[in-house]
Amino acid sequence: MKYYGFQFSNGKNTTTGQPNPDPGFFHGRLSTAGDAKLFFSRKKRDEWVSNGCNSRGGRIAVSKRELRKLCRGMTKKEFQEYLEYLEYMRKYED
Image (cartoon, rainbow, N blue to C red; front, side, top):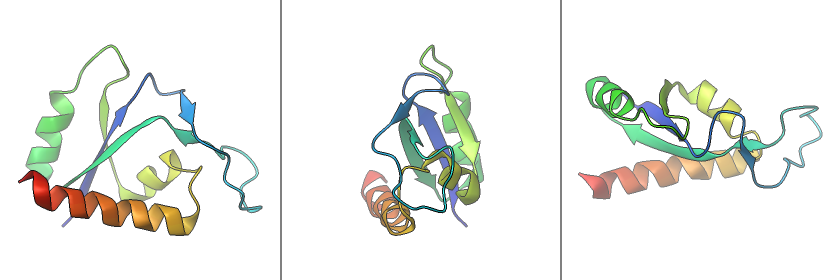
Protein backbone atom coordinates (compact mmCIF):
# COMPACT_ATOMS: atom_id res chain seq x y z
CA MET A 1 0.00 0.00 0.00
CA LYS A 2 1.17 3.54 -0.74
CA TYR A 3 0.67 6.50 1.58
CA TYR A 4 1.39 10.12 0.76
CA GLY A 5 2.34 13.12 2.81
CA PHE A 6 2.63 16.76 1.78
CA GLN A 7 4.80 19.48 3.31
CA PHE A 8 3.74 23.05 2.56
CA SER A 9 6.53 25.40 1.53
CA ASN A 10 5.10 28.60 2.97
CA GLY A 11 1.54 28.11 4.11
CA LYS A 12 -1.48 26.45 2.60
CA ASN A 13 -2.38 29.31 0.25
CA THR A 14 0.99 29.71 -1.49
CA THR A 15 0.97 28.59 -5.12
CA THR A 16 3.75 27.87 -7.58
CA GLY A 17 4.41 27.18 -11.24
CA GLN A 18 2.50 27.82 -14.41
CA PRO A 19 -1.28 27.38 -14.76
CA ASN A 20 -2.43 24.04 -16.11
CA PRO A 21 -3.16 24.52 -19.82
CA ASP A 22 -5.94 21.89 -19.72
CA PRO A 23 -9.19 23.70 -20.64
CA GLY A 24 -11.09 21.34 -18.31
CA PHE A 25 -9.77 23.25 -15.28
CA PHE A 26 -11.73 26.46 -14.76
CA HIS A 27 -10.33 27.45 -11.37
CA GLY A 28 -7.62 26.35 -8.98
CA ARG A 29 -5.22 25.68 -11.83
CA LEU A 30 -2.00 26.39 -9.93
CA SER A 31 -0.17 23.90 -7.75
CA THR A 32 0.17 24.46 -4.02
CA ALA A 33 3.80 25.16 -3.14
CA GLY A 34 5.31 22.21 -1.30
CA ASP A 35 6.77 18.75 -1.56
CA ALA A 36 5.10 15.36 -1.55
CA LYS A 37 6.57 12.28 0.01
CA LEU A 38 5.70 8.62 -0.51
CA PHE A 39 5.58 6.06 2.29
CA PHE A 40 4.94 2.34 2.27
CA SER A 41 3.78 2.39 5.89
CA ARG A 42 0.94 4.41 7.38
CA LYS A 43 2.78 4.47 10.71
CA LYS A 44 5.90 6.04 9.18
CA ARG A 45 3.80 8.55 7.27
CA ASP A 46 1.92 9.54 10.42
CA GLU A 47 5.20 9.92 12.34
CA TRP A 48 6.55 12.15 9.56
CA VAL A 49 3.40 14.29 9.69
CA SER A 50 3.46 14.64 13.48
CA ASN A 51 7.14 15.63 13.44
CA GLY A 52 6.52 18.31 10.83
CA CYS A 53 4.83 21.06 12.81
CA ASN A 54 6.60 24.24 11.83
CA SER A 55 5.84 27.87 11.08
CA ARG A 56 6.00 27.36 7.31
CA GLY A 57 2.69 25.55 7.06
CA GLY A 58 3.43 22.10 8.33
CA ARG A 59 2.74 18.65 6.96
CA ILE A 60 -0.44 16.75 6.23
CA ALA A 61 -1.38 13.19 5.31
CA VAL A 62 -3.06 13.06 1.90
CA SER A 63 -4.60 10.48 -0.37
CA LYS A 64 -3.58 10.23 -4.01
CA ARG A 65 -6.76 12.13 -4.96
CA GLU A 66 -6.00 14.90 -2.45
CA LEU A 67 -2.43 15.10 -3.72
CA ARG A 68 -3.77 15.56 -7.25
CA LYS A 69 -5.80 18.54 -6.03
CA LEU A 70 -2.65 20.07 -4.54
CA CYS A 71 -0.88 19.60 -7.91
CA ARG A 72 -3.49 21.18 -10.19
CA GLY A 73 -0.84 23.04 -12.16
CA MET A 74 0.37 19.71 -13.55
CA THR A 75 -1.17 17.95 -16.50
CA LYS A 76 -2.33 14.36 -15.94
CA LYS A 77 0.84 13.08 -17.59
CA GLU A 78 3.08 15.33 -15.46
CA PHE A 79 1.28 14.20 -12.31
CA GLN A 80 1.76 10.53 -13.22
CA GLU A 81 5.45 11.18 -13.84
CA TYR A 82 5.65 12.96 -10.47
CA LEU A 83 4.20 9.89 -8.73
CA GLU A 84 6.74 7.69 -10.51
CA TYR A 85 9.51 10.06 -9.41
CA LEU A 86 8.33 9.87 -5.77
CA GLU A 87 8.44 6.08 -5.91
CA TYR A 88 11.87 6.11 -7.53
CA MET A 89 13.25 8.50 -4.90
CA ARG A 90 11.69 6.51 -2.05
CA LYS A 91 13.69 3.43 -3.01
CA TYR A 92 16.93 5.36 -2.47
CA GLU A 93 15.93 6.92 0.87
CA ASP A 94 15.69 3.62 2.73
